[in-house]
Length: 76
Image (cartoon, rainbow, N blue to C red; front, side, top):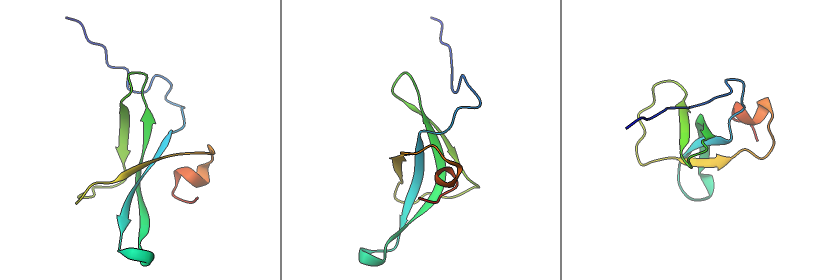
């Protein structure tokens, strides 16, 4: 059996999703950007987290609507 891993064929490709973790509760809850992800042709994702976080309770993947540097770095 042969398997080929093609994580990100075009290394210049912009991320397709922003990864965020919810901080706080109720109306005061905010989202902290913890990384980015690229959608793969096989339906999976290549995920790149910023820093060395310990994720407690999971995180969300939000599609990036407009491909701009501001969105990638956490602004929206």
